[in-house]
Image (cartoon, rainbow, N blue to C red):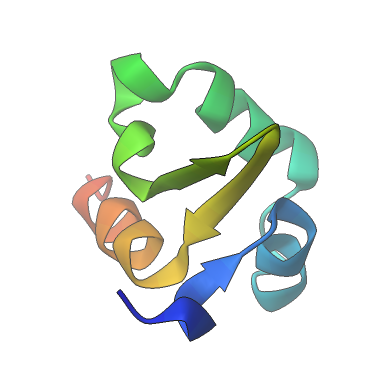
Length: 63
């Protein structure tokens, strides 16, 4: 894992202005159902997102 790809939710929103923080938090809340759990790294009470896995997950969501 490349630790430069580990982002907080606010950093992820900054890198992807089309996404809102509330949208990402909804994906996290429903992570088991939508497969977003693959993107998450939980350390203590903090949640981080692996950017490369997130980009792959986002590509899989295309219709």
